[in-house]
Each structure stands twice: as structure tokens, then as C-alpha cells.
Length: 224
Image (cartoon, rainbow, N blue to C red; front, side):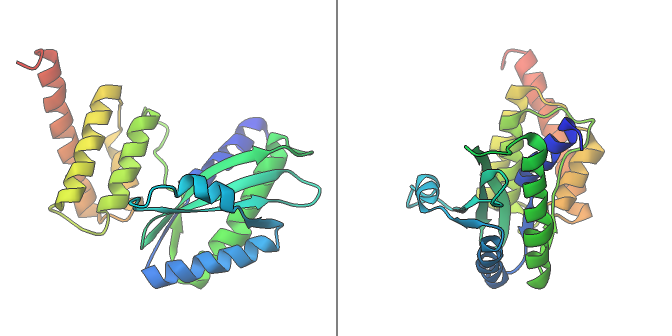
């Protein structure tokens, strides 16, 4: 693979989304730890301590460090954002030999294909790698706010509950501040791939268009 393809494979770690019942998620994470040991990875308590420091935080991060003997040494984290959802989290390269983009991409791809996906399938969980297509132009803070909204709200249906409404407003305001450009079909596909029904996804897209237009008009008039 060329350099661009390698970077895309590595970045796909953060797009991993696993959904299902809470007890199946718990069993899968234990199984993933066992499987990763066969790939040369171990849990990293220090990294986890740094990411799970707040006793009120809703999510829990699991970190694994290691890799093949003759290959790059990586830190790969999984973020249990709720009882029913796990996302790919932080990844980083540790000092090691053979750590070019292609070598790193090969390890990440191997873990996804031969650890994450088989374990999720074994536990009857849905595993996807949602992404917005090439038309939408979305800045990092807006993307993070969109992911946070989906993690809070998906599965609750419409109308949104109070916590979901708060997450929606943060997403809407961040998108307005960063002046992003969503393609409507890509945004709808994003919502569907993140667990919303097609009907609810369509309603959310229309709401986003309506409310972001109002915010833009309000901004243009100076808030008057």
C-alpha cells in the first residue's frame, strides 16, 4: 500500500464502533484482551490511569501496548463510551524499529481484522467503521461533538431526552462556529451507521439544516 492508504488504515482505528447488549460488550472486551496477548499486546495501567482520572466520567478507556516482536510497538485504546457502545480510541507509536507507516498500518489492520471483528462477531455485536464521505467538510471539534451526541442519544429515539438535547445543542453550536459543510446524504448515512433508524436519521438531518440556517441568519444580523 502507498503512504496515503497506510495513513487511512491507521486512522480507521478511531472510527471503530461496536454496539450491542451491555453484558455482551463486557464479555467481548475480556475476550479482546486475551486475543491481543497472542499478538504481543498487554494492558497499560499507566495509560489507563491518565485517561480514566475523573471519578464522574461516563466512559472507560482500555489501553493496550505492544505489537509483533520484529515490528512497531503501538499503544491502542478502546473507549467504552456507554454500556452498549465501544469506539476505537487513542493510538500512538512507541519508540521501536520497523515503524514506518506501512508497518504500523499492517499491525492496526491485523488487530482490526483478526481481533476486533472476530470477537465482536462471536459475541453477536455489530461492528462498523462509520465515516463521513468525501463531500462533507467537517472540522475536528465538530466531528467530536457529533460523535459525542451519537454516543449519548443513539437508541433513545425521538424526541430527544434532556441529556441528548444538550449534546445536540453542543454539536449544533460547534458546527456553526467552525462553519462546516455537511452533505445531507452523507450526514444521514452517518446517523444510520451510528445506530439511528432511517426515519429518525432523516428527521435529525432536517432539524440540523433548519436550526443551522437559523443560527447563520442570526449571526449575520449581529444577533439582533
